[in-house]
Length: 272
Image (cartoon, rainbow, N blue to C red; front, top):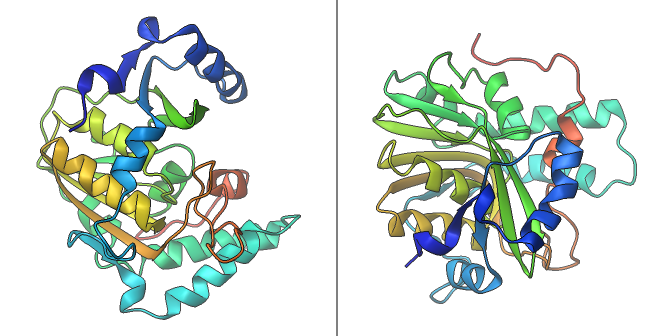
């Protein structure tokens, strides 16, 4: 069971070593994190563990590629771009469009959840926010654009949070849009933040390794949340830096989605 006294820390509570680890990320992104969620190496081992077959996922994880084989072709394009030595603008645009294409093939489109007036919508910076905006999933007055940055720390991850506290209103459900899942840490950090906002959370992502997908569902259960996770494709494989990789050759699956798409101008919008 997750211990709230060890996982969540405000800025005044973190150790000097944690602050030193966070400083380069604060300098890079121009944010001063006001809260931190810490997942140790041991906690990841527990959350990522399978009960047998590593490909078997909980029943509330819906993998679209199991019924829509065209997603496998989309994923090939994404993986090629992720492992390319140089990204041309045309390559980035194709990558971005494939991300949106996969969202459109999920069991339920994120926009169908977002348009419900009882839903609080969350687009995690950077790629989650960019993609959620493109799909009209961040309605005014009931949406958040939190910063959740993963910071390597002592074999685990420290998640630095900024603008990640919801208002005190209760919602029927929350929707979290993120470009790609790896360890699951940034989404779990947001689930922690949202635990008193709603007991029902839906998550939409293009891809996730089975380890991270299992962790999100397991963590949600421990917080007493009902979690439905809609993902385009699932694989098995995390490297030592908690990035999703192909277990055969260690190549990246999607790479850093934010770095790839954040500088594109005027991305197309869906559902206008």
